[in-house]
Amino acid sequence: MERHENKGMTIYMGDAMDILSSCIPDASVNLIFADPPYNIGKNFNGRKDKWESDEKYLDWCYRWLSLCIAKMSPNGTFYLMAATQNMPFLDIFLRKHLTVLSRIVWSYDSSGVQAKRYFGSLYEPILHCVKNPDDYVFNADDVMVEAKTGATRKLIDYRKPVPTQYSTMKVPGNVWSIPRVRYRMPEYEEHPTQKPIALLERIVLASSNPGDLVLDPFSGTFTTGAATHKHGRRFVGIEAEEAYIKIGLRRLGIATEYKGEHLHRPPKTYEPAFSGQTENLTLFESNHDSSVYGKHPRCP
Image 1 (tube, rainbow, N blue to C red):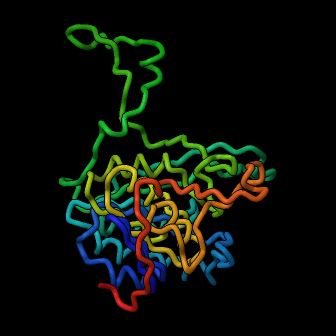
Image 2 (cartoon, rainbow, N blue to C red; image 1 turned 90 degrees about the vertical axis):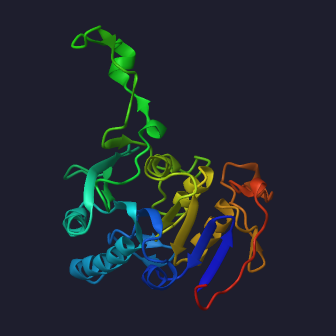
Image 3 (tube, helix red, strand yellow; image 1 turned 60 degrees about the horizontal axis):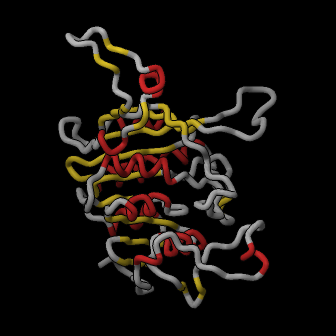
């Protein structure tokens, strides 16, 4: 097991089940965002996202979900992403332990035809759950969006004693239209299922306060950590693949080197750096010192 830490940002490399069991104290986490493998055959740096059966996949999910629930603080919040075909089973499981406040649809565009013999999928579901429905964090003012109909048409609410224009701002509904991460976007990393930072910023701002602890047990490109870092929260991320650990160390400003390798974002084919320059494009490196790299056989 490896542990890397700097200024409130902590990364563990290893199996999520093991680290959740041994390294994360119970009732300590304010916000959890989990985006696990979907069991649909994606290739994560050589690791195939496919279980022997749906039953074995769901059993694995129920075990790590139970661990996550135990780590939630009394007023904690949990967001779960999953494949559309698996979410109904996970929804039913979580309802036995948490209160589901919202069933969110992350809707995105597609540049090409996804299917010819059925309607292709252009969304992913997200569950928004809390431990205590009478005590949880929701910062509505921090995630307001434009109320397009009222703002554009300047509609008047004549039901009020004094007719008043409808508010031009509102809390987002449960359909979030946020573009997927594309190759030419500055935030793009080499990962098959990278989530956009706009998605995670909305979750982090809505459901945590500055200084709170945010956990992502399947960190991938560490977008959750990047959003958490940007908005003054603490972060614990878990990831099994070394290639993605290096992305996290770089994006979170935890380290500039890993096992003697200088950490920098690989240049894209259309960039001058692709022809020989090696520019470190770390998101937050300018604000942080390099930190210690080390192996921890046991959690502190």
